[in-house]
Length: 427
Image 1 (tube, rainbow, N blue to C red):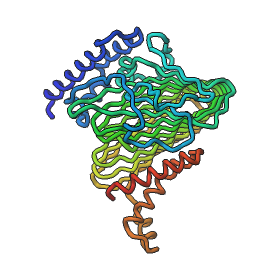
Image 2 (tube, rainbow, N blue to C red):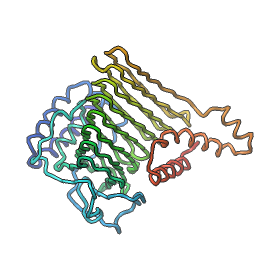
Image 3 (cartoon, rainbow, N blue to C red):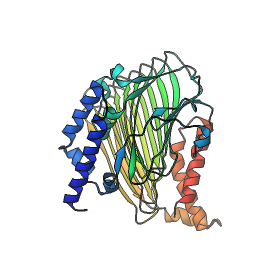
Image 4 (spheres, helix red, strand yellow):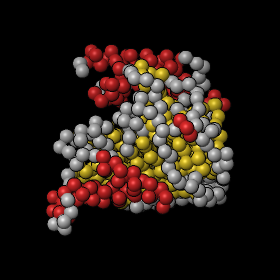
């Protein structure tokens, strides 16, 4: 596509977003974020986003924001996870009372209009074009609190059901969630994205976490969007003294999936774990980005990001561990492992360290490769067929990400999902 046509499509998409924003009254906070979008138009980030060939189909289509609607079990085409939990269901970004539980135990849930609540700028760790789009177009904010000293055994299950409307249109679904885990509280959140039909939609998700002193949260995100969808997720996480944040991301669906996780370790003795597993196939594109800012001493962070790429899929990983001047005794490690099952796949990986303190222990690494021929030969020499041997090796590669899932039911569900997707890919 030549540059002139691309400029035409960019102008078209920005004009459509302009109409969507000004079609109704917006809060002051939304206007602040919209002004950021205007500034992004001429920025290098904006040019990198808009001059990407993989977004050309997105640029060509008509955008619309779906009306508030509901859904019941009879219209639900995709099964939910069979796990004991408190269910909180959203349909096209709006709360769905008919499928949600009436009781959430010790979890406190409030759904408020954004013009009635102030969101602090301290939750903006790194700026992002799609982050500001979500903040400017979302109308409600879902506030999730876990009170001081609460210990919840059942996870909170956030179910994000999305569906498009017709061909050549994209439903723009904006979601804004804020989670506050208060002092010495402990819980688990499972967020599950799924498509209810095969029409195009775009999930534009903005989530912020605040963990008070000694708080702990296990956050599992599972993406099963349909293969005509787009997903842009921006997560900003603020961690305070002695807190623990364990994040597990599993990406199976979507035409294009982009995830930004920005974490600030603001005080001492914080423990952070981020794991991700992506299994793109066909022409899927997966883009994983992390930014971990060690701002205080004696903190530990661990990251493991894995991709299994097949057919003509593309993957990208970009991660930064930053160690501030006063963050002595930091222990940070980041690794990205990529397994290619086709000569047509592409991967771009760039882990980085920015260290401004002495007496720290930090490392980063990346691996890219095909199935090991020696491993394959060993299994085949034991009478295992070539196809089954490859599947066993790929499955073993994926299992390392699962080992930190403590919930047995969730572990089994994710393991079965991985096996089912490995059965579908061509190897």
